[in-house]
Image 1 (cartoon, rainbow, N blue to C red):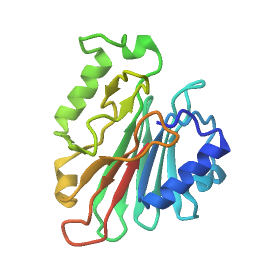
Image 2: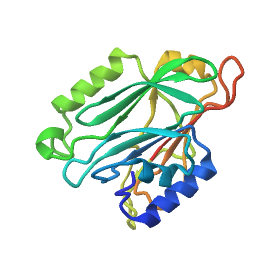
Image 3: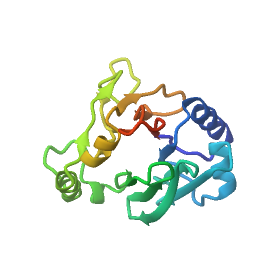
Image 4: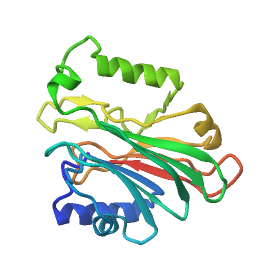
Amino acid sequence: MLRGLNDPRKRLVVKNLMREWKCDVVCLQETKIASMNRQLVCSLWGCSYVDWAVLEVDRTAGGILIMWDKRVLDKVEVLVGKFSVSVMWHGVEDSFIWACLGVYGPNENNERGHMGETRLTPAMEKFSEFIEDLNLIDLPLERSSYTWSSDTDQPAMSRIDRALVSPDWKDHFPNVIQRILPRPIFDHSPILLEAGGMARGKSPFRFENM
């Protein structure tokens, strides 16, 4: 997670990382941007072949931005929820239709429940049911067991962030790998999904969640 994209220096770092990692889809969380526009998005993506969907910030917290390469994916539909953004695409080369959902949890304690509680809050139960109903797969994480660290002398570590995929998506991208990337400006490690080619031999697909 970014902890804000208001700083131009952070946006430059993100732009350079995206150029290095060559992703087709990028999901940025906790952007803290009140109003997203094309100029700002292009300052991150680095070229004009970009489209995007956004969940604006809640006062000064949160915010989700999903960006994608229009040469790879053609937008079908966008749905913005209270804590999420979902985009349905049509593959330009393979015509495969699929959707990406970016979720960022509630900021208010009365909405997310108290941290440290062992019981599931109503929001957690609903999300768990959503995962179960869709039979989503929690992919193994390579290069680390954790995505967040407190960066203290005796750090607390947790795998807070993850990418879940549906069985038919995994069938279409059978060689998918989930791994973490360096975190030069993030308090969470970015996650990269690298498909390595589709089942019918097309070019690789790369998705990144920051």
